[in-house]
Length: 234
Ligand SMILES: [Zn+2]
Image 1 (spheres, protein in one colour):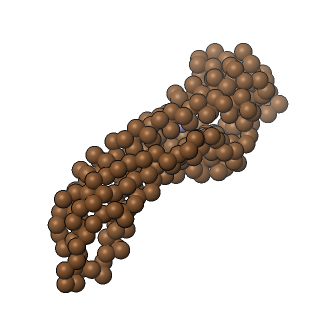
Image 2 (tube, rainbow, N blue to C red; image 1 turned 180 degrees about the vertical axis):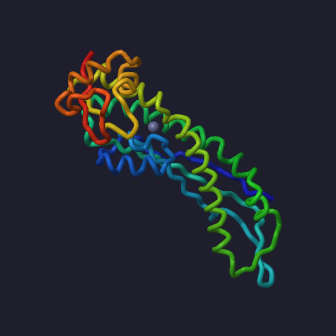
Image 3 (cartoon, rainbow, N blue to C red; image 1 turned 120 degrees about the vertical axis):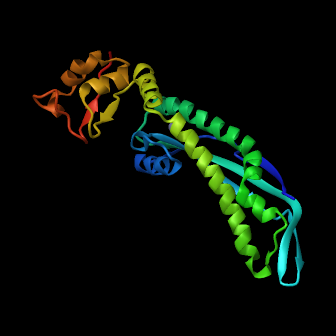
C-alpha cells in the first residue's frame, strides 16, 4: 500500500534578498535556467520530505512498509542582484513571482506524480528489506522524491526563462526605470541582435553604436565579449 502524501507550502512570504550578481548566476544555473548568465534574479525552491509518519513492520532481520503518510514541504527564496536599481528590482520581482506560482503549481501536482513513480511503488509494494538497510532506503525515498521535484522545476524554468521573456523584462526596465541600463556583450552578439532584444526591433543598432562609440571603436560590426554597453533611451 502506498503512503498518503501531503504537500504544504511553508514559504512565509517571498520577499527578495539582495545578493551579488555572481551568486544569482550560480543559483540560476543550478535551477536549470538556459540563460543563467543573463539572470539578475532567481527563485530557488526547496522541498523537505518528512517520512516520520510512515509506518513499518519488522520480522526477523527484515522490515517492510505498512502504510502511513509522507509530508512534503516547499520553501521558496528569491535572490536579486545588488547591481539593479530599486525600480529594476521591482520589474525582476514581477518575473520571479511567475516562478513562485509555477513552483506552487508543481507542488500541487507532486503527490500524484510521486505516487506514480515505479521505484517508489516498488519500495512500498510489500517487498521485504534487510533491517540494517532501513536508513539507506529511507534516504533513497527522499532522493527519489526530490529528484522528481527537481526535474519538474527544471523543465518549468527552461520553459519560463526564454530569450523572449528576458527581452520582455529588459524592455520593461528600459521603458519604465530611470538611470542607465547596461548590457555586457556575450559571444556571438551584434548590435542588431541587441536592438531587437532591448527595443523589440533591429532599427536601433546605429543609436546603440553612437552611444557607445568610445567602447566599441570605429567598427560598428565588431563588438567583443565583455564590453559593457549603455543602452540609449529611445
Ligand atoms: Zn526566471
